[in-house]
Image (cartoon, rainbow, N blue to C red; front, side, top):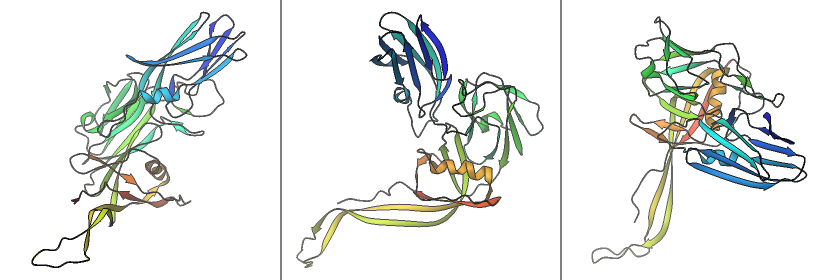
Length: 335
């Protein structure tokens, strides 16, 4: 958290410049007397206001709920980060304003945000790569071509790989100069501090064109992609609605026979990625906790659900990663 002074006798601690919408985003205000404090959370023309009285000169706000209201989460759009303004005012005089970049995600103790990593680019499918950029100092390179600067908007970037590397055949590299990276803890006032090391994303190209291609948003607001091998398909069928007797006709007497109004059919597909390394297994685990998994059907992204269950990571260097995909309900006639 950051700390500052609102006015004489009034101090404030407030969220870091980079914050996650599902972590607690606290504003703490301490003064020598009691007063009324108003916090306004604003983005463009939309704002939310919270007004409270101090007790013993102290009051605390958690603005996380307000932050989440600014995000519009849709299947057809990638979720960006948002710059949000916060205004703090005291009833007896004194104002304090700050801005924060908010990410649709959460970070847990010990996790590293925005680290260099290896990315598999499945070139026969639509794919982006996500990273955080604090400025425009981003360079890209594919195969043996020279590095070139690319324009990005500061914040969470979802970079289209086909558009950035149209001639790539084997590999590509994204280089971020002196970027933000940190391991999250409660030790320091500033959770994310600028480092002097360059952040490197090594992109390896795969030409695989057969499988189940899935996209999801991970806990840090980054989109991940993976091509799974398909397995067995199962169908669960159940009755819905009321039962009704079949009317007799002049040609047929069907006394005692009934029909149901409709049927529900749910399709489940087993999928597997065989013998992945520990780093890849950790990345794939994010699929199990993601609320937005989608499957590419060749034309568009279809929302899916990953079945509940337990996934165990062994001590082996390589192991299989298995999931069960629940497809949307199959549409059928209803009487």
